[in-house]
Image (cartoon, rainbow, N blue to C red):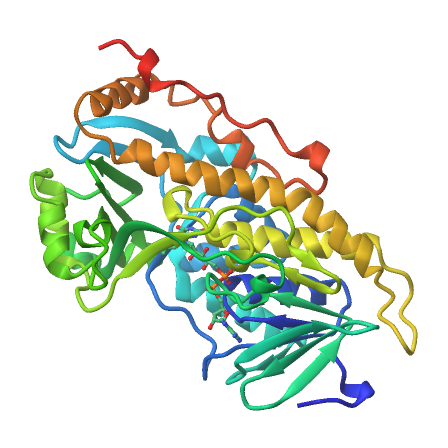
Length: 421
Ligand SMILES: Cc1cc2nc3c(=O)[nH]c(=O)nc-3n(C[C@H](O)[C@H](O)[C@H](O)COP(=O)(O)OP(=O)(O)OC[C@H]3O[C@@H](n4cnc5c(N)ncnc54)[C@H](O)[C@@H]3O)c2cc1C
């Protein structure tokens, strides 16, 4: 590990997930020397599909990565929401029109493909990428920040970006909190498209079936060669406080009574692993001295808005823009960045936006998983929505705000009780 000034990074990024790598790329594009430390023996991503809304593809375009992402992904024509019990359509987005409105496409792709795109871009940009580095400590020093690792190594730089995910260690510097257990669990499965041909699936749409305490998502991947599914449900064992929760027997029971399309998809889910779903309460301080949180370390959401990775990518872009604005000429001693001002600008705008997304994701989950009369009221409300009404997407799909005054109004709230049946 380098301690010599000549081989020194200006910034250290801890965590080589989508958040860490995209931030490293963004900062390198501003002329900084960046080193990324990843705990795992290799850079990579587990999981299946990822939805990337226009507020993310706009940034990929700016980085020169959108064509590659398009080539590896799928541009669906619609996003369709259906009732999971009777499969009736409730509402949809015309994603061609979404692209016209926001200027960039709604893209779905395999998360390992997106991760690889960022990894390769980091290699090309000269980011120093280090694996097998389990960061265990963070501290501010007089001139910057220092990190230490489980094997005794230490490194320091002008600033440290902690992109170490849901269980972030750096977050402990700022708040004494724990991940919030939603008691929901996600099963995933990506299979060759051939396996679902004849299953009454859409090959050019993201389809979300919403049902009582469960939902089911389907969309094509890799130019339509693969098909991605996500099954999410409330675990009775989690609600009862049992430690062994989210197991495949619960998956089978959770979707009893759902429509034929969902039933046909369930046997294709991976049954050897599942993702328990946690978020954290929003916090409004992400910065301590020269250490700043980014991505899930700062704002892990429930995934109902499909904005977790998107927010992480936006974080890196916003941070880099503020660094670019607060940067003087490089000298022998310094990169020239005014870190206090750059971090303050980043924190001022991102904490509020991400707070809204995290809280909205929770309330969308509640709306999706309703039963009984409330389910009927929700369905009526969704059916009444004009397909070309963008008041529910403008605040999130529009251009990423760089300053608090640019953050758009939140979408209108419509109380379900106001819907007469
Ligand atoms: C079922 C599901 C579906 C989702 N769908 C979408 C979607 O469609 N669209 C979307 O935008 N988001 C989606 N998300 C959310 C998205 O996956 C996350 O928000 C995003 O991956 C967070 O990226 P990150 O880099 O901040 O964190 P992570 O991906 O958690 O990366 C953190 C990295 O830090 C490393 N690390 C951790 N601790 C240390 C340490 N001590 N030292 C060094 N390295 C460390 C880890 O190994 C890891 O590589 C979904 C999530 C789930 C669960």
